[in-house]
Image 1 (cartoon, rainbow, N blue to C red):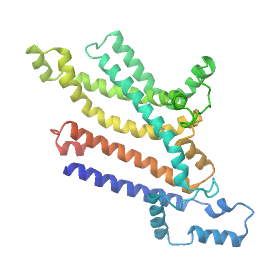
Image 2 (image 1 turned 180 degrees about the vertical axis):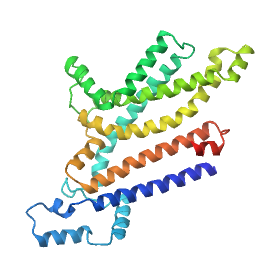
Image 3 (image 1 turned 90 degrees about the vertical axis):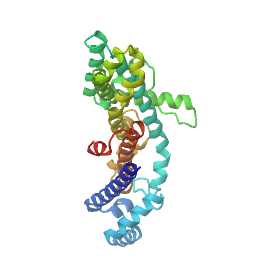
Image 4 (image 1 turned 60 degrees about the vertical axis):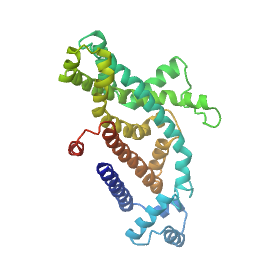
Length: 319
């Protein structure tokens, strides 16, 4: 319990420091937010009034406290690019799309990585083992955006399985919505699945060579029973840490994939905000993505402790 509380406190401190860093970075960037929002035809009096209204003339510490309060409460942060529209509203509109894409990607990662890893058990040096090795090497080497472009070319333009750039909203047709996210989710999942297979497969082989496995076999225990009852559970523990990083990568890596497939999610919104120098929107999105990374890694550490309470806290802290 102490370890869980300690990890939560560290996560809160980390997220606070991330928010400070994001605010300070965009506060010292050259350029006048009031000029970006008012346009080139605004007079100096109008610009000064807008700076006062936006709080740009106040102390930077006071501005940070106001910004943090508004960010946490979801109020009074307005976009420059979208003519003063609420930042929280813009994120809420696109969050279900990115969240659905991430969940589908994580599902694909589990459906691909676990069976492939178990398929190589007891088959080291076989054709199956070499095939899985080739998949992991190719998957790790191929970036997500390349996989996305490859899917568009093969499955979009060649086999006509989907229309590139077409997006159907969740409220219109749920199945069509999932169909629009299928190939983007697969493009995110394949490289991450390759990483997961590599770690889980190595962990399985290490556990299979352990003394307790040889002892269990000498006592007549069935290999499948040993794998299901002991080996897989022990192999999953180190892979959970990797899986936590993969979950964080899924949320951050979807930025490029959403733009490749024209999916109107958080990632596409971030690229639009960057191209138009929409600092309030960029700040909020960067903090959101950083929070996802911190929360995913914290949950991974807590999950390891719950699965195997015998793990010493000192060992987990080193990891």
